[in-house]
Amino acid sequence: MKKRDFQFLTGKVIIYSNGALFLSVIILFLLDGFLPDELTEIMKFLVPVQSVYMTAIVKFMIENKYVKKEEEEEEDGQKILNPFYVKITRLIVLVHILVILSGIILKGLGIIELTMLTSLVAVVETFFGVYIGGILLDLYKPAEPKK
Figure 1 (cartoon, rainbow, N blue to C red):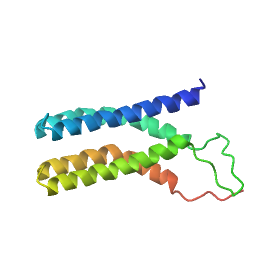
Figure 2 (cartoon, rainbow, N blue to C red; figure 1 turned 90 degrees about the vertical axis):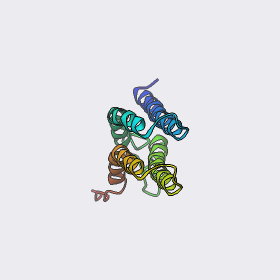
Figure 3 (cartoon, one colour; figure 1 turned 30 degrees about the vertical axis):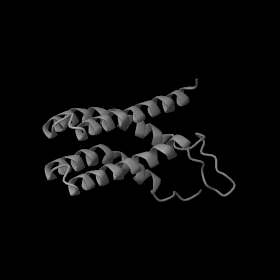
Figure 4 (cartoon, one colour; figure 1 turned 180 degrees about the vertical axis):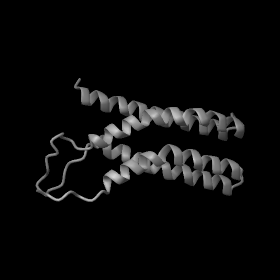
């Protein structure tokens, strides 16, 4: 297996397992497996550690966003994006919005308290904000003039 392929594969495993980890904690909380204070304590430790792992992967993903390193262009002048970059970018943006929306809905239905919603927003924005910011800045930066 080539190094770049192995890096992408390992990145996928870490990103998907992080998602499963956080989803499991949230589901268990909603099923009364954790009290609000316990959830906060768990997230205080999980978010910073998992963010370190994710930062390296997102940085690698952005640096290797094109299918070919030499950034060959198609006939219409557009570069071909790596499928992993496309999937993970969509996933991060979608999960970010869905988690915030879910928190708002849960608060609106009286399932969680306002303090839990504000904690959720703080955790989500801390965890996803860096990645979304990096991805969106890279994705929407002005094109460099052709030489």
